Image (cartoon, rainbow, N blue to C red; front, side, top):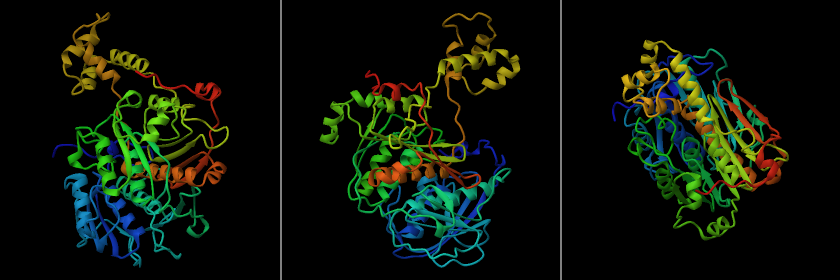
Length: 497
């Protein structure tokens, strides 16, 4: 697997950043790890993110002492922190971005130690529901007593985002200066001015359906497993696997090199075993789940599903047809997490009065119309331009070109299947580790708020957004779409095939 390009998806052009990354040697000063679990969470998440920034990070140099006692994405805590982080990076990328001892020069120095020393390029910390990043040591008192991972995980995404921006160069936006973010309120500002949320450790969640075990879904699972909940049960549904090219491995946080070609639900199952998180995995689409055999599913959920009752769903899918299917179940509450370029987003559906449902503005993709337009565009090109466009993309290039050159092609003509396959394929879009993890943290925080503190959630905006390009946060409520069949007529279950 030495020839796979694990950085393909985040090497694509993205608005506001330069097109050619300069790989950086990144040094992390973590200091002595004691009982401050927040700093351990930050370090684990940061190394997992940086180890997937292929093309932007060359090596990770780490200064740390003490033990890791918090959950890792791939293994039980491995004792000595340096060895654990070395193992984590090797698992994630097969040695492509190694963790080394902090000797020699570095391009970017990150300080997350409990006693910061002047001279680093970036300082960061996280505790409770709050995260902070700056270019000088913090001037506020930080309590690391709260063992939760929300604030530390989000702080790690902010750090990885700055490293990525520094490697690519900014054409629009800004670098971090002294920025704090509260996952409790969804606001940015000064650390002392932002509200913190209540402790999550030891609390319980009702059963959750997690639809989608890709980047955001795996991030949500990691946070649930690391939050030390007293009780939770997650039903994970996904038909997909980690692709053979490894292009989704740059942000699938529970998957390493050895998980390429393996089902995404398998890594979720492994992680649950490491964190004692209860649940059930189903390899298939949501429609398949509704009619499939679910041996081992918790009995109360079996009974509820017989009555078509689905209480709490987390939507971690990126296709509108799947979002329509989820809303078609008429769940009581849906929490959605998604990404768009350098923006992370989390939305509560069914919580804020008169706000959109998951199906309102996520109209299904018209794949047939898209394919017709794309084929017409191919036919409008010159022969050599067609050849360049299709080279390496179809099995029989000459047959595909002959088909496109025919004014009135016959059904079943040689080359038709190659062209149809090309025009129906969905082109991968830009996606990067820290944005996906940020969306996952925001989604988990919203899930905790909605379930544990519903009155607070109902008073807030339904949608929270965070833009890494300028470290800006927005909170908005999008109204319902008048023509939405789900809102107008209520229940629209998905067709049982």
